[in-house]
Amino acid sequence: MEDVTPQEGLRRVQQGALLVDVREQNEFDEVHAEGAQLIPLSEFETRYAELPKDRELVMICRSGARSARAGEFLKAQGYGEVVNLAGGTMAWVEGGLPSVQGGN
Image 1 (cartoon, rainbow, N blue to C red):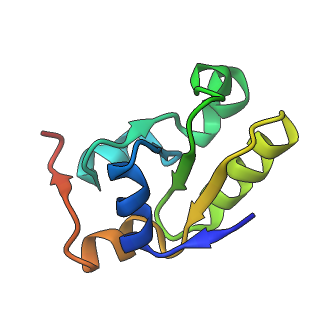
Image 2: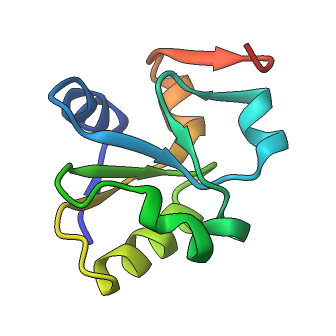
């Protein structure tokens, strides 16, 4: 599965891709990329069907490991356009990209 930089991930989201955060709710509440849809990895196998198959998916977690696993799972379920955001939310925030902090 392809890894993309946070900047490339943002560009793809701006072009219509869906950003999918697979961290747990408490992590998401602390800080998350603006516009990200939360489906925690702990619930992923039961909820992944909520994700559209006709849109590119950019997977994100804290540092890139969990989102890579989730992305590989989606690929195995027949999802075509799935990429992993290298460095995860930490890299996204460090890059100064739009994010939401403190559960707002």
